Image (tube, rainbow, N blue to C red; front, top):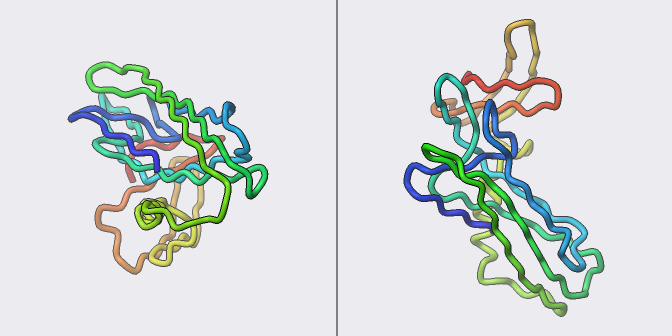
Length: 171
């Protein structure tokens, strides 16, 4: 789990930043025996400034990362170079460099196993049993959803990601 702790009133951006900002970048190219790093993005917060909306995180954000080895049974060296923008009244680029070795051998249950699963459960996914999207129709002036929820819609927000359109205004 990649845990970022931001000072009061500071924030950083989600994978789709919205009207402004830059998404964090993750460079794993210096890793050894890492085929893929799967980033589990927790749901962001919607932030409004001067009539523009962006998506990101304040306070503490915990991002689960699953590393998939190139060759199972061999050690991995996870090398992450991450860049992100953190903002308050101004935005400041930040760089984070992490190196960690995952030894070969028989898999054991890490002391962080339950913590990782708890953070992974916070990542939105299509298999959510409490929420069902039946339809989504993009019209001339609106995007209309038909959603069903077992737990209600109080406090619910909608984040739309697409290569073709940007929808940042709150529902």
